[in-house]
Length: 327
Image 1 (cartoon, helix red, strand yellow):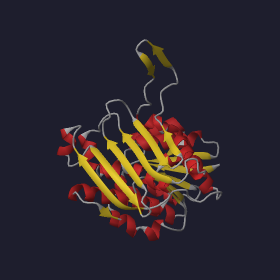
Image 2: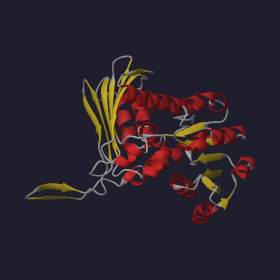
Image 3: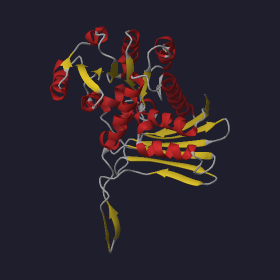
Image 4: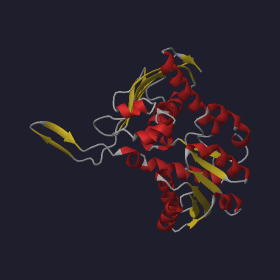
């Protein structure tokens, strides 16, 4: 049993804490959050202790640390944990500042393992699509379509500190594009608008974006992002090749459907990421266990985080300038 601590007891931290507490190879040794009441609630639910960050870092029995704190704390906390000899699973993004993320290579790019929390790589549907690509099911991949539309926009208060649509939302899609293309994008073009909520525009962000990534060999990926779909949480991928199409569709609440005189009606899409990616969070944790045990290197790490951040900044620069950006 590997003792694990979770840093941050907010929405994502609670997911990780519950998953650690339920995992057969892990024990949740501690939960840390500057809001004492929040930490106490999660600790009471999971049977863990409430610990300060310093206590977590200083405890040699704790083998791994999951960092789910606010983004501005990710780099420093990950570096401290790695320096203390602990494996780290850090939520995305590494930082909102690309220069700071690049400068952290010495602290994060070697030594103890770092798994970056691009959990969608572990989604069984997207991972299955990747396996079929590798197996040559559609021949050589030529283009991708990634659709990521939220069911409803976030509050303007969240938007102001989120880092913007590209770094907060689309960064998952930039990583997924790299994962599936198996080739680095070298050119980015993006167009954005604020069509959903004027408060998002007032907060300095956009709520709608279309981004085109192009690789050196000519593969093209189109990413569609919206803060509000109008029809639920839309998470789809289509991969096109000479031998056909591979498609990962939306996941429904159930497989029950009604067929009648007005046609066929299926159940609703799963509601937002807590439901849609619940399995992916568990699979991501399984991988972290393999990393801690020395049975696997990190499947996604520091350099992937930097590269996704580079694409996010390039997309933002393209949207502002109206020109494509080389990366």
